[in-house]
Image (cartoon, rainbow, N blue to C red; front, side, top):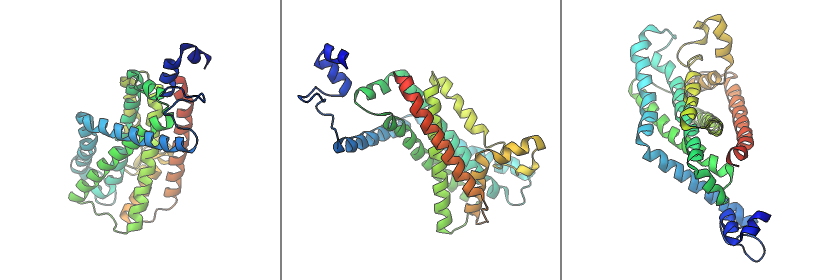
Length: 286
């Protein structure tokens, strides 16, 4: 603080977003209760910014929307006839494709965060007294919005090729809530990975991780058909209970303990991501 005072009001203004007032605070930067409302406005502005960036990145947007649809069509029409799941394969595979869609879309958050760090955008936000929660939250909420649109598109195509989900509203609400919780957890985890990566290219490696997890799970084949050495991992990794919960909720079958396990995994991943990002953010931007 002494350095800022020594450099005069210009340095103070650059640090706090406005000229110093007589009481030693920066003019234009609210304090007390008003500051909370200003923080909310900043967060909403950053969410709108990230949504606009997603909309302008046409290539990435089309890929996040079309790739899950293409994968579903490939599995249903090319591999579905050779895979025996005890039911129509399109009915079995849709929940797994939804999770694959969510993971792929959320992985782009890591690239967005790393790009902002590399371009110095986050440093500029910090001089305007924008906190890490608002900065990372903007990317995370934009990811959830983007993935929600992609999920609706995938469901619409699935219904068009023969997927017939249950019609109970409560089951739909429960499935939507679980999917949103999973999106939030994986998006924040992706943002944390973006803080660790030094370049956008390195951050893109997170895409491989989140796209790989649905394969050794119950997404595309029953876990029981896998080799014994893989069976334990596939049954106890975080993606499997989420997929099993969505499958039970959307198809109207008994969910068992899968929803509790799914929620526990999502909350644990979210808590881990938020804690890790809180530790990493000040180290990365100092």
